[in-house]
Length: 218
Ligand code: DC
Image (tube, rainbow, N blue to C red):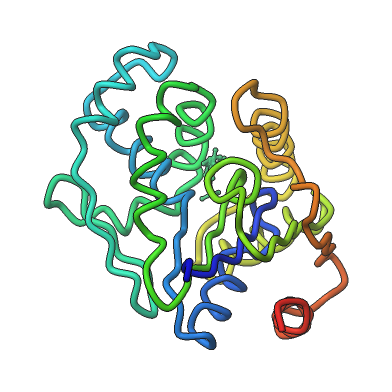
């Protein structure tokens, strides 16, 4: 019997990470945060001062990187044996990830790393192309989104709560630029899979989104 997969795709800031992690925990399934793989590559390129637009050079960095994931309550990632968890969530990392993720050969190199997460008893896979490209045969697919304004407000609140200075207009611009790059790239653009449940979380709490998805998969 094949190992079940639930895919949750959507733009950045829609709540995919929190929701996917909670559902994986409730079901006792593995969790794949595919964005963290692209983020790790972004960090590897920034560290090695690799030109993010040089496809061949970025592919070499992708092939060489050794990643270790600890998917406990908080995701921890080691890149070439060094803990990079603290850098994963920064805006600079997110932007670099979005640029390298647009390179089709990079996506091909990182495909198997993502497929390897499909382990018993099941997998919740969070990203942009989980339901369309990486796990096209998944039994259940969700497209989770929210308005850009709402996503920017959430990000702003997170930063302020962490004591980090933030500017709402600038965050909104960054989110819109990232959406555009992720949706308009040629390879594996962010898109709703044909049979995916469409969920707009703009006016929903996290527990409400989790309940809707659990109802859908049962
Ligand atoms: O989900 P995230 O914000 O951590 O993702 C960071 C970037 O990685 C995002 O802007 C696009 C890219 N990404 C992707 O292209 N495909 C995925 N499956 C996940 C992320």
